[in-house]
Length: 320
Image 1: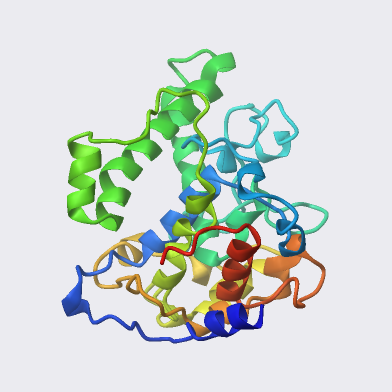
Image 2 (image 1 turned 135 degrees about the vertical axis):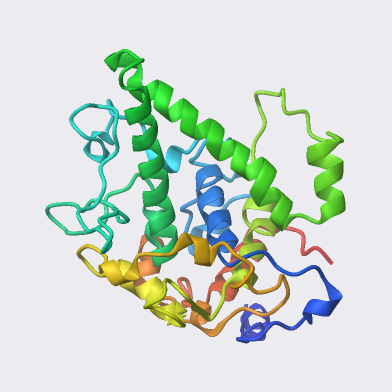
């Protein structure tokens, strides 16, 4: 374990280690967190590092559906244990009270007892950007509800609106996100020309653990040390982006993200390489609490160390 820790700590750097000239320019910074949102939709494994060694990789349980269905947004729907996420019309999702200076909602609702953000998947409250992406999809759903309200029976309103949003979400992933993230030849071969190696008609399809616990972590290297949230909040430090969401209460309107700025090439993500920025080695205990009550050897604060230890415990291939 000491060797794994040393390897993880060797990745600490706030600068990319591969010059832009040697590879295609990275996508805009917002795609880092779009990928995090997508991964949370596809997979969930709350096994602690201590217990990961007790199971084989093939026995890993994915608590989410292995499909792009936005269950991290909708939970079980308005007639389930997640009823508290919905308005009284049993169709619209609740939004937080804060608004920007233009009167636009941008945050999640709060639990009246704890003043913590209410959402179906607590992982989507891991940072300011991800929390607001979640809120953005809630707003998209409510927009679909409003547009369908006069044409769809009340009893079918949630079903039709959520279907429309899922289709739009899937379209965005296929024709925008994947095109930005994948190698262009791979994207053309698989997505455009349809040369696939997996039989998607098989109802037993599941997310390979080599992807969910290894390859899908590529986004960690894309994380920047600082971000421009909006015109008033430039060079906003990553440790604040992570830390602010773990405070009780609503977000400050000054944290509302200018999406046009975050999803343009003026603010690129970091390259896919072996460098991971400093704040990812100092995760607060609030971000790790579901894996243990304190930061310790079995619940380390360094994200690269956690990833390597989990992969070794599950006996995943190293990729060498």
